[in-house]
Amino acid sequence: MMGKATATLIFSGILASLFMSSTYAQICKSYSFSNSNTYSSCNDLPYLNAFLHWNYNPSAGTVDIAYRHTGVTTSNWVAWAINPTGRTMVGSQALVAYQNSSGVVHAYTSSIDGYSTQMAESDLSFTVSNLSAEQTSNEITIFATLELPEQKTTVNQVWQDGPMNGNTPGQHSTSGNNVLSMSTVDFLSGATSGTGGGNSRQRRRNVHGVLNAVSWGTLMPLGAMIARYLKVFKSADPAWFYLHIACQSSAYVVGIAGWATGLKLGSDSPGTQYDGHRNIGITLFCLGTLQVFALLLRPKKDHKYRLYWNIYHHSIGYTVIILSIVNIFKGFDILDPEKKWKKIYIGILIFLGFNAAMLEAYTWYFVIKRKRSESQPQKYPHGANGTIGYGNGTQHV
Image (cartoon, rainbow, N blue to C red; front, side, top):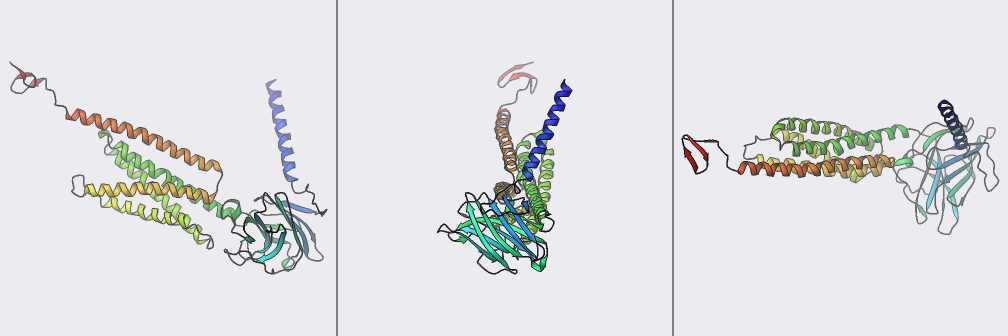
């Protein structure tokens, strides 16, 4: 009976999966346009809730397209573009649409020649006709007929959305799905590729984030906790010191790798800058390197300058930890990953903070108790010169 129940569950799961897959595959194909236009081909674009519909005319080398972008308001602009020169934003030949302050949906063409563009109206490198747009509820659709560049059926496509500043398109987000919305499409076969270079760039961004969250954001605080809370126990000396050095050295090495990937990402994105995140990262690298060199100049415990070295070492160390946590949260805002990753890191910080609070209380208790025991006079069962007793209460043998 149990076997029949299991088989039924499995079979039901397969049917549900097939139904969900079929439903998803038909999202664009089942759509009906309000102007009664019909299109023989369509693709559900992987990012930004967008869809591309088209009819390809091989004899004329043209394609009639309808680009739909959902999840937008009257305060947003949308754009779809072909880039004849590469899989990037720069060089894209864009169709742009938004609702202006008069309530009219305005559609126009714009040649994107830089990262700081405001998408001013301009001619494209190929002919565009029958350009129009409409907005219904939370969706903008752009209609146009394109003369394909050099009559190539496979083209690089880029699509975007962003906020409006009055009647001027503002800068779109430079993180998350907005930096992944590019691919190639073959108007003849209907085939599309993955994001053009976006996966590689996103992978490097993810590596950068993980390396820094593990090193500066986790190992550094852990190493500081080892030094602060283990060294009060005489039995842990000098083991605590070597554990502290191992933890902080690992954090520094991994952190340098994360910092280097950040520099590479910055050099590969000349039009995108995150000044605050970058400046804190450079500061962390400098302070972390100073800590490494300070270890080589560490005075002995009884040296007259040891107190000043300790003040310097602790001040720089805690500054690095605070700046690291701040910069990691800045990185989360830039990378815009799934919310669970931010929650996981917050959980790690809560765990470290809770343990630090408990250890802080215990070590203070331990230190105070030890000082009290050391301040009490020692008791001798046998006094000097053959006496028995304590203090002045002596008894001669």
